[in-house]
Length: 419
Image (tube, rainbow, N blue to C red; front, side, top):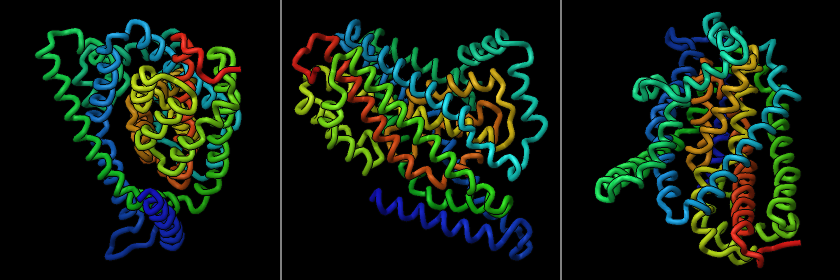
């Protein structure tokens, strides 16, 4: 199934490249510009993708956080787990930010992409015009809004994510009867939205065709030239996180031998690469962590299922790099305010990400909209989206297993792989 989808995506990209080159920006059929037809197809896919964002993110965060908060051992185990998740995801995003700013892969598109409208560019600059304190103040006002329904309807996800984290945390604290009813509603909503998301993702090849064909038709092949730079930037970031940050974390925090741990996780990492889904890989991940690394079921049953929703560090890094790449490609001035907004959003959106292939597209569109940037900028990364999905899923699973091992060691399980 996954290989079949990958083939369809590659085929659609090839067809889109050919269609864009052949039609150009002015060719018509029955008086209609081809580029408008391509844009219509691509925009329909983006609309469908955006349609599931608010309910999917809200339900995912509330159910995941409620499960953690409702566990009897939350006071110790939950606090350690959640703190570790926040730390590793934040580190991944910072690494992504650094490599994106150092390599600046979007610079190769500066001459080929149309600049943003003055209003959008001014909105970005306004984040920074009053200094660092006012910028941070504006971000915190977005984080804690006065009307949650208003910001949700406007697509301002920063406040929604913060609200749903609080909602999920306090949900198990109310009376058992009403609490179970409310939680059941959110669980049901999450399952429905997952089904809808799977359907939307079935249309991915058509969305890829429309978006890529429009970009190629309007800018020629300029948009393709920087894909290699973007691809390499993401791989550099993932490599630094996987082979530098995580080994240091395992060695000095968990007192675990990184090489032995990586070897023990081999089957789970191969499954993650082939499925591009941390959720689908979960059973194999649990088996590897329990039987090959020696972590107790008490730890794995608590940390790993939560990690598939709340600890997608590879995806968070990718989303951060992709957002900066798109900003650079459109020639947006990366002010301090915009950079901080992208970093914070990359961290927070990772806590509500569905563990399914290409779910990061939802987060990228969300971040672009929150920053006042065009959502159709995702067309610039679709050519390598599915390939990078495989790599970042491996990093997601690797990070999850490292978190489980470190938590186990902190809980006194000395039989886990060690030096």
